[in-house]
Length: 482
Ligand code: GDP
Image 1: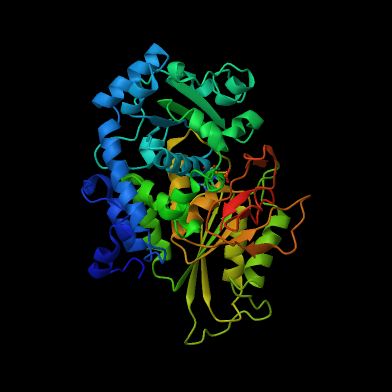
Image 2: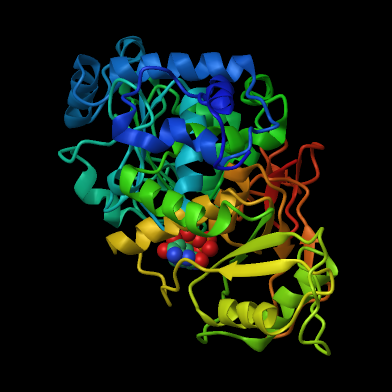
């Protein structure tokens, strides 16, 4: 079904089971309606409720998006500093502004989180374009842009927002300067939801606090975390979330496919690579190597881990080091291994193993790596394009191996609908044993969840409250939807 898809397959899933709206201009974003040529049809169908919610969100976005009458009016409140009263505030559009922050994988996960939050709270999502958003992603909504206009009044403050900002909801609460009386709501609040957030910031996840800022027209959000699992613990959001996602572990899978369409030049990177190296293989295997060590790699303990995991779990066949030639049996297949890594060494090593020795199964293994950028270069255009193309290519594989703690890998597994083998995080330069384990879920992990019971106002293990919010395999304190 890959690549060589016929037109019937294309028409079958061109709109991803109803997830995508009709009416986008096709040429301006080829990936939107061509993704079904490269992906297998997802076995996970979006609920009809999710589809209807997306269509009504699109209407809201059209009515409230940048430069609409409502947008201009609500912007005036920001300039006045306060909303006049709840009743007048009610008639206006309300917004969540996502602030550009952190690496690309983190950005993709947090935009999805902010979008879900917007849907749940009837707000409009506006995305701070930063340096790369417009270069990497097509507009997701049909009639108006999701990009925050450059002349947005608070924009110059975005870089300064941090844990200690006096404007943040947490600090205003802590310093008792937040009046939640109906007469004088602030016109905006800064929500600090980054990994270093404090107890007062974490009250964002409590219903009584959600209520207290529900009429504030502008919420400015900075986060590097996929906070969706904690929304499922809120009694006021949970019923709606379960209606939207009866299969709870498909949140990012659906929202990611709805929101993130590569722009045409990134689509060129993806499709040329796919056709040249992956399309003709009988099986595609993705191996994502992300090493969080200070010293530059390649590291022996990581290479040993890659081999231990892929051979023990039979993701890749063993080689016969005694023989130099085994005639391939008739039934042998070709497997294409797509590796991604900032360094060259792991790929070079694996490729050499399968060139120098025959496999005991007779299978032929091709190993490919699109780039080795050596280090993270978040502000460079071509670097970010490659990073996005590689996440997407990994999502087109049949079997996926990812690295613990990496949002880059989460994006690939979520878009692809894949439960990866996770290479556990090595400690003290030692290969972990076991080297990897199978993920329970294709959902990303929330790395910094609050451990707080909002009702009882005490600490609580939030990974133990309901069956569908559990701790992650790759990070024991993280939370994921299963
Ligand atoms: P995380 O740090 O693994 O959670 O992922 P992020 O995507 O948020 O940040 C890592 C960044 O480093 C990426 O966005 C890329 O800029 C770069 N990077 C890391 N691994 C790779 C890789 O395998 N290929 C490419 N092209 N870039 C990578």
